[in-house]
Image (cartoon, rainbow, N blue to C red; front, side):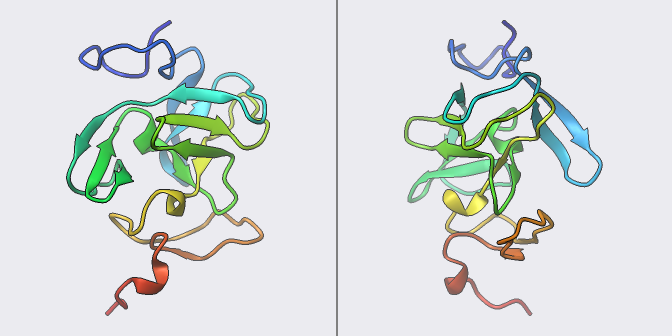
Length: 147
């Protein structure tokens, strides 16, 4: 099975594959990862990989204080929702379905589940019943005021 990752990243049997996922352009969201097949609630979708760096970027997620995992091929392309359909385990480096996922479903995580502060805050358009509006990170109340 062909990995979503380039050849220079050492292969792992549980990496996301082109048979299971597609990187596509969504008209409202931009570049996203969508399922090519169905997944059950609780099913591990994939093990992600990347390069550890000491700072936050657009496509990195926080592993621990001052340590971020940069993954421009899978994890860093997951979209945000205040009502996510996947969860990300940064310690074990796994993505797991929170709900049943049909083929064509865009993978959505809650960015605040891993990030204290985002690289770039944004106005959320997920339209979930509990949408928080402005997404800054887990420590939103500590974020400096705009302006």
